Length: 195
Length: 263
Ligand SMILES: [Zn+2]
Image (cartoon, rainbow over all chains, first blue to last red; front, side, top):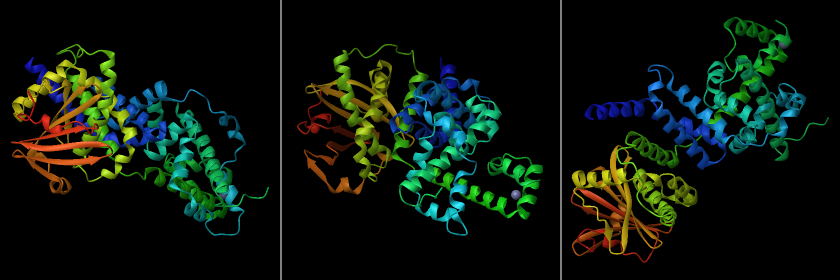
């Protein structure tokens, strides 16, 4: 009984040292993924509870952060992912590569066309643009942009083929740029380019 | 390398996924090609902008509360079957326990944030109430409750009363705040709940606002504090700080001080 207790204490302190420091990153990603503060907290709590139960499956010395994100992604996909498919995905192919550049490049000959856009676009616009991406694209974009995971790490975390990660990143970017452009036009930061 | 090939590799370069060979070849191309250079510079700037905006988040009280929730859950995972079974309450009583959640979280916030430093955040209480309802299982657990009572007796020399006038003890648990073990008990009378927190007094510095508002009564010092419809009372009992909290104005919190009405 005493041994079990010692064992438990060691497991617990191990877990607290290795896993708990990643909570702010987990929460920040969860907030972007779920859009809802309470859901995000529930998601992170569930992730930690599950990680703790399976702590003996974690290989010491391997990447704990990636391991935690894998668990969280799994729970997110199974329990939190919005059920309704976004219809927007169908129109992605119509968006040109480097969409924003294409829209801004032709405007009055400013040296750095992005500067006036950056000056006007709000933090919330960027967050909204990310949050409004369809879940599949949002997941890889958040793991890459926000957490800096490599394509290979994302493939493992989200259980995807490397090629799928690449193509989702690509298409997610197009949508994101289109959205940012739309915000900029709607809010009057820039005038829509005459077609 | 031609323009088409250079564009093909654009995002792999920006995401630092391209091979060294490709990166070098792209570099050589954009050194010579103005148009590709502009696109690379633009896309790089956009990417940097988006990442910066996304990462820009303040450390939040939310994280503190979440941490305590997680630690509480880990504790229940460690001792799941030691005292299997729920505190025997009817579903009706249980829904009342949810009402206690508001108080729980208010007080938790105070403890978790050096008391009142960030008290302006109390505006978002509605959101927080839901957070607390998740932890109610922790209170209903007999093992947690008896464990918390034993801890309070042995470590904090505080005898947890099974009832205080009309208030009945619903349950309790141990929580961790900033490395300090805190006993947390919930009492219920009709629709009114009171939360009692027991904290080693030397771990916590009393905020000056509270010290300024102190009241002496029958040789005991009370520190009153009002926030968001919640009343808190702090008093020191030897080396233990007792924090009592309720949202009901008519409750006499003095009764929760041992020797002042508690049985
Ligand atoms: Zn070129």
